[in-house]
Image 1 (tube, rainbow, N blue to C red):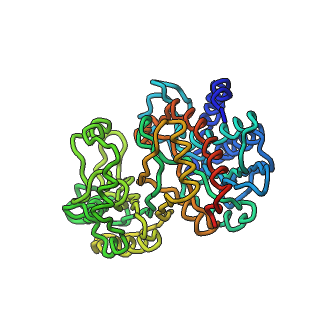
Image 2: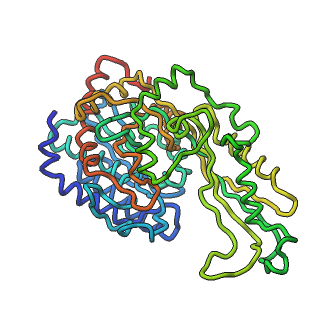
Image 3: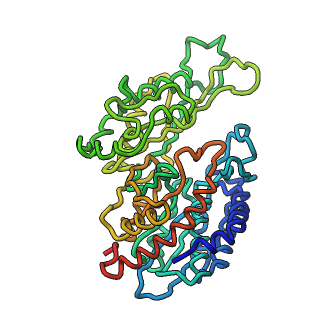
Length: 462
């Protein structure tokens, strides 16, 4: 297999096409972008057809459609189900972008745009890798594509889709590029993801905004109360104070933690890249452990009262916050959500009323390192990077990974090419040209080795 000549010949077109879809503001969280989300789905459908996929269609769900396509060259060969998403995070705050988020540009060999890495850039690598194999007659096994439009809002309709399409989605393994690697010169394969519990809270005081001079000091201020409640969710050691929160958390042995610590990491570089003078987190754990194998709780947004120009002296009637918890293997998002809701209501003082609204969640996952698929991914990385990949845990969440296992009975391979420094979910998100092209080069080798290794052993899903 020699895919580089074709990739090199068409790399400008590959990039131009990526720029086309990056210009589409497919923000699934904001209803005003609904038509744009559909436009991005249509784009993916068209490009799969042009690449040579069969049965390409948009399958409707209760939310946004799933783009499906396949190429079955021989039913006796193994089948890989490729998963990705065409929706993106909101670009707010727009004023912090150096260039407009939906007008992609290249600076310092990086593509700057919302979705450049998460996940349009990474899922589009798979479309172009597929095209490359089709045009070079080197496709070694069957491929199915499932590209959704609701990942950034929790994939809330995807479980129903999986149940309704079990036969259509039959495969041996799921291949996903929605994760990162350690560095461009240090390839890695993600073997674990944290889960998620995401909630919105509303604190209400008086029946209207009050004059802070007339009522200040005598009536509960919902913003002050909310701030105290949020602050109380962690103790002085940054341990989460919700009763029962840690009951199911797996504690790793000293030997296991020592093995994880072999991952290259510079705390000084970490702080410098983030522009911070120090780090903080749960006592007794390293920075990498805090961000991967330990759960956490964070306030993702807080608002209330007057935030316009100048001054308006009021005690607001309401204050709001969005609070998320990242979960580790063995924790249940449903259980943690209930524990959070019960606790948050219990700590509210009588001066206010509190409402907790759960949004979406996802389960933590661990993928096996003794499977055919993992061996194939490792060999593919070694082929194109010149060194073996390091297995790593990652702090983010992909809710559908657990669903693939629970509903379809399929394990996943998390073969990401992004970097932690790519500013995902932040202003100035970017994705390296190196990473984009290296992904297109590496993915065909995954199929090559997966087909070869599957020839003498049972498929990984059995």
